[in-house]
Length: 484
Image (cartoon, rainbow, N blue to C red; front, side, top):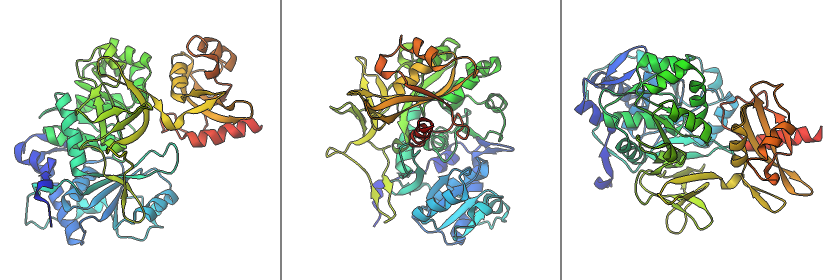
């Protein structure tokens, strides 16, 4: 029996009712909320005719498009569970995930058939959905949906092991978006560039925030420079990771585009203070944030009028009582935006919690005297060297302040004398600029001796600079170097 108290407004249905003529989405075409609603209803009707079931897991594989976005909203309307995956994954990896998730069907871009040939479930391309004729009938979205049921599954980054499927309800996404919108002046007529992928919760969050505010989602052209897309779409908002911000700050045009925007939501990875200061001094409207897949994106953020000192922190909780620091220094979270749990092959959800109902994030941090959160690193990346606790992120941040260093990752590798020692993988702006000895001479001014990398290795050629760091893989790579 349904619990009526768990039913909440569907953000898209509410926006289509309240702002039918407002801009909802733009890629190669421009869609008002009224037109976009009709598209979602069309996809919903097709899926229902195909026999889609409530709770059925549906994998989505494709590049961002208005069609992809409409299909995702249609899945939410049917009560099925949208499982967006990275379309760049090899076919074997997609098959492995599918074996774990047991999807009922797959929606995908045309051209992905070969990658999916090992998965024997019904599938249809987004383009085929688009091409099917409308049948008429009900031209409305279901206004109220059960916000407590699973709505999406997002694969965690897997930087310390096998990726997990984090399950979110519509309520999780809606509460996270409401809290975020209360912190920034997003409204009807605003445009938010979909600058992050939809297989990350930070990309999904853009859809929910825009629908709640009556704002529009702009789909960037594939392969086009980010600064061009920000200017072309006249986006007032964008969600960026530090690498994207750094690249934009490297060009005069990029800095100009950023200055003209209303808000840049920055998160997804540790941010060095040098980049923050440079952006702030250039007039970039930064909003620092802290969150993760399990919290439906941001749970902590700075305000739009933050000072430079504020921006050195992650900000304050968007919802009171949702973040605490444990006696051991770990960041723990709870509240309506925290996910339902990890999906297990048994079909059950598992959510690690303390006895008081707090979810341990695996991050470490502290509050300052003004209630701002400072994230110091990951508890699970810490290693002990000669009896001293070492957090790789601290060394990485110090190395990023050196002009020669373009990208860096630090890991701890086993050592018979110290237990573990820090080693660094670096990409230099000019490979001839520096050697380990010269880097460590200046690093000594920032870090104690036991935190200096013992070895420097070149950044692995097969690892993109803007990809998520797999410390497990880098540890294995370091071991190979040390054996040579």
